[in-house]
Length: 264
Image (cartoon, rainbow, N blue to C red; front, top):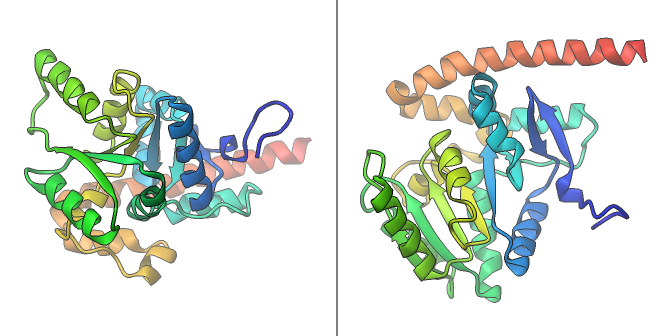
């Protein structure tokens, strides 16, 4: 819904260590993406949790990428809990794998076309095949798994042409944070697709290559521990450093917030 200034409910943000996170529900996210497609206005979605916030706190350029995003969804329960603390009681988790499912389900009747960019070799193809089997009538118009190196300018131009030739409405990006956010910011507008959505590990989850945490762990904010046990070498540095740092920095933010409120 738009107010007199043209602002929608989905435009509302709350500040988490300088990252403006969208105060939304899953239904809001799907509705907003549908509006972009109808308007043919290129935007991108950062699906952001604790890791993305801490990386943005370290890197002003990445924080700016989040500031310029069409949506910054609260991917982790800590961000949802903070939204509630900040008075946004309606906010719910908009988790990458669930967002992919919700958008794919909505797209069947609307004819939205999907392109899958990312993952190791063969992952995007497996993902597209499994989603088409799950959502009958889903239009998957292309896949591409990039090499584990930067593309040359010529290769990147060819990739942009390849994706544009497929005429997708949505480009799903599975490169992990912060690589996928930087890629979307560099390609929004060059790609004609109205929606670029960075969903990271959702590629591996929905392709059947990795297990997701049980729902009770997801809802209680313990998904990180499940992933850490399954990928300790890769995710250990992320969770064992970033999680305590996030708690400390949020405690400072809340303390400053309460001090400012007390002075008002």
